[in-house]
Length: 474
Image (cartoon, rainbow, N blue to C red; front, top):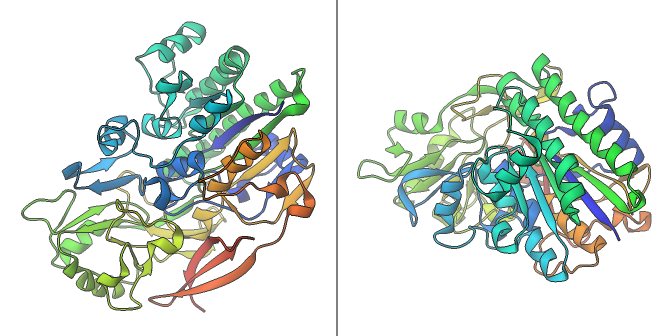
């Protein structure tokens, strides 16, 4: 029976795969099926991407609309940071999870199939990837866990988790050990997911090709090589498929600014929580969200942003709060939800090479990322492009699949291979991974957006819209 090991390299750009720095990933890419048109979701942020992956739905379906967001119904005085389990559970508002669609583990359990998560990312992301772990009695471990039975189980088996470092090589290596030395041999899950925090951490803090970033890439790749070696020694190796993915790409941040401060300078009463002296709550990001006390403010904010050379097109949960043609609906991107910001700003990036010789740089709003650090969350081509490789088991050998794909299509593919239904998912099984005849190049289109921008996109075989990259027209 087919088993699947998924490995996520947080933030990995597909154009950074090479035989020198990532030899194991390069080999898997050459030997398996590479999806040339794989994309993230919008916003291209980790705690939006993780629930999109695990539920097979975009943010408008599962309800996690940003890494940092505002929800007055549960916390009117502050922003919620979903890297924290406490804030994730605040959003859940007494429920098991804030997600409004079932996770992979919940879909596997009725068929007697198991899922295990090993995460070197944040606790909040791990909670979103496996929200029903306690109820299902299945394995979920994160490097930040110190309490509970699973943390004790790992500590007893392998010792203490190493402290966080930048680059986060010790924790990446330890997470690989948890999967290979404990979870796979002891728990034997039908589907396992290993989430590696590199190269994302090093991209953010040092740049895309800084020396310590290349070390982090090599370390993550070494874990992948050990997984492949383990698989190849198993008696059922021919039935074990490896899926390597990234949740988003990265663009070099150039032109750091604070949208909240820009709004204050323009005369708006902006803050990080609703208060008597605040009319606009702003969440910093590569695509900052703005929640308005009075939607009548929207045209004034739109007018201000339209005059800034660093601003890209405006997006809106309900475009009717603006004059016609001033904003693109978030629903076009699959990102419109009751939790969504009233307005979402984008930044005007460039596809010119950065200082590392890689295409793409853009302004950004992130207090803890330095100028020149990697950034993601927006609609830049380099933020949306992702790694997606499927190798071994039932997957095609030495193939390049052209069909449009995003994170929401991965779990439906896994479920299909395990003979399980995908009802209620927005994503679809990527049959081009197993059948050449099922692969088809997507239709290409261009949307013209306000302010002289265009959004390049693809249409899948069912007409589903896949954004590819935002750029200036002309």
